[in-house]
Image (cartoon, rainbow, N blue to C red; front, side, top):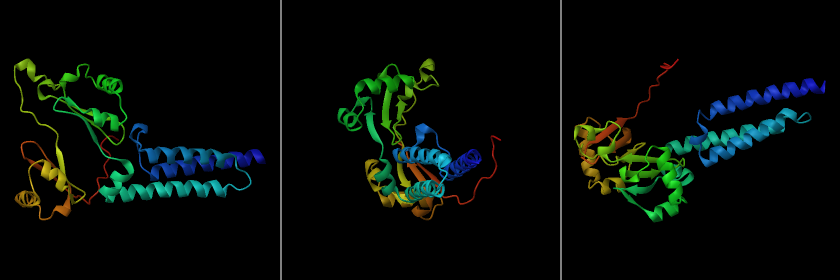
Length: 234
């Protein structure tokens, strides 16, 4: 009788764990934030306890549900608020720009030079002289932007040096205008509003994402409420 109960609670534990994982979305381990990682470990531990809890299985079941609900709530809130998202999950740190390393930023990110060079090698840059910009993402990964002449398209083979693109600046995120980034690009809100109007966008709060490149070109992605239900990789 006890063995049957263990089997049933184990199946219940697996089912609940699967449902809660689906609720919180599909993410790779490397893409999990520190909070998501802690919650995942905790839910996994409680799930194992649920499988062997014979007297009061409801307690670990409730605890699992609460952890998952809080995680889903925080994901919802951070999707709506840029400030809260940056507070909880951090922001990007520029480690290298225009071929120059920023020692203080490396120290702030707790990354020593050896680790930085290792990350560069694993991304295919054995000579960091070919790197224009390196940015530490909130996930802990480092994104590298090579100099234009060293891109995989090998323009150097044709003796062509393309115009440098630089880093795209986000000037609108989730309908919020990022005035500091506009100022960095030498633009202001009036210029942004006029540019939006010229592209047929009436209001900034209707923009999901807008980026500005070094050439002053504004790329606008409006909010889309409709869902794509087709699975193109099915």
